[in-house]
Image 1 (tube, rainbow, N blue to C red):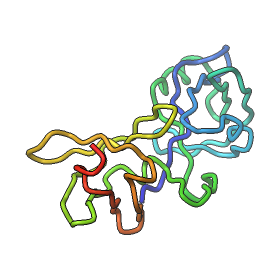
Image 2: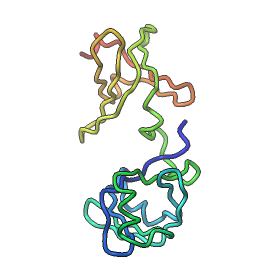
Image 3: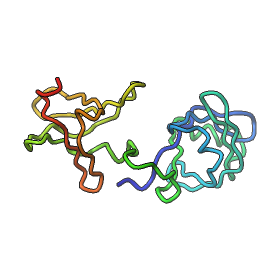
Image 4: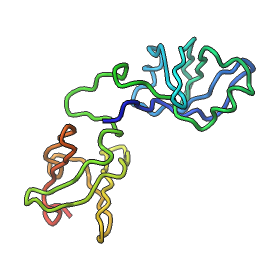
Length: 164
């Protein structure tokens, strides 16, 4: 499992005192209100304050106090360490933990490795890369995805011919 989880991406600076405009990469933007520390480019920063706005968050961290300093972090991820990540309910997973998982069907057939997760609104879709074959888009619904074992890094699905 990865050590750090991205909660947002710094899209620009805000104001004159080193604040960041952050595009949230989390299901619940309110989680920013609870952040006490973040990592940017591998360095730890204490969060001074944040302000929630529609589709973005303004974040001020200690030690970055000018526009020029803040500009160096544009397009960088704002991350938290795993111990300070939110606790997910059973059956929910961090995208970072899903990427790289092997996909197999009930017959043991290799169906690739998860490259990305696509959010469609109605259900997520796992994008699996299959060597020597076309990529596979797997709808994350009960009749298709049977088990997800993050520890073993294996996702088991119904045979493709049953749902395509």
